Length: 120
Image (cartoon, rainbow, N blue to C red; front, side, top):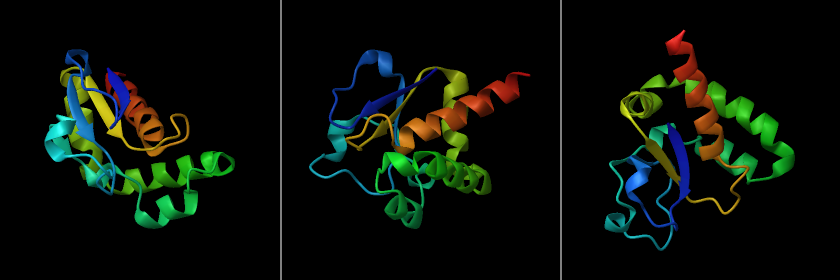
C-alpha cells in the first residue's frame, strides 16, 4: 500500500516505511524530524521539469507525461520504493503545498501501475 504525506505532517505508526521523494531538502525541516528510511532524490522530477511545471494545475497532464517518461528512463531511482511497497506500507513524503498536483501524487500513480503489472 502506498500513502502520501507532507513533510509538515507528523509521522505515525501506520505510515510504514517512509521515503522523502524530493530533489531538494524541504526548508525548515531537520533531518531527524522526518523519520524517513531514505531520501530518494532520483525518484523526483528533474530540475528542468520541476521548474517548468511550477505546480501549475494547467500543466498537470503534461507534467505527468514528462515525469513518467523520466521515471521510465531511470528505473534504478524508483526501484527501492517499489520493492518496499511489495513488502508492506510505504509513505511517500513530499513538501509541496498543493496536495493534488505534485510529484508525489504522480509518482504514487506510476508506482501503483507497476505494482499491478507485476501481479499479472
